[in-house]
Image 1 (cartoon, rainbow, N blue to C red):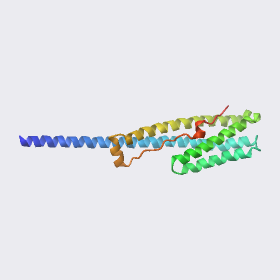
Image 2 (image 1 turned 90 degrees about the vertical axis):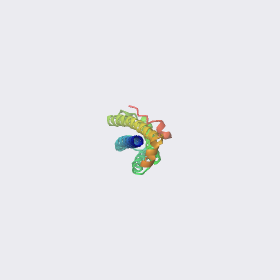
Image 3 (image 1 turned 120 degrees about the vertical axis):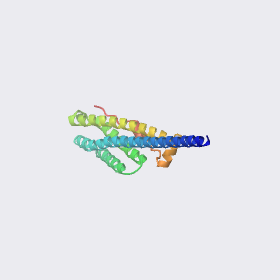
Image 4 (image 1 turned 30 degrees about the vertical axis):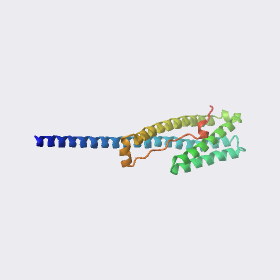
Length: 192
């Protein structure tokens, strides 16, 4: 009788250990999936930002033909673009967000400048570029929203009990949100 009790207790213990190992593996794999989702959603932001970087020189060249004496504004846009590209290579979201904010602000000034030149506003190439930039800005906003949602899900998992135990052991750390800075809260107003 006593042997049966020991076997039953041993079997129960083995079952409990198996369940705990199964839970730990499932929690670890869920954290991996969530981290990968954050990384994939960041890659989508990157794709859209690179698209915007590619549009900016064409837009500046188009404006140069009509407003060449507005050199300071045009140079500021290109400098902000170069700063955003450089920040893309640097680690850390705050630096990247600051550079993107500067680019957004300079593009806003460029479009305000375009309002003063009716011939420029009527230019087909400028209208096409303006429309492309507007669509790209919308895609950037959506990609940031998706990224921040993925970060929220991941951070909740890394900070919630009991999965935070697995997160701590596995080296999973909370990730930063991509927050809009002052200039980006008022999105680039692109008028067609």
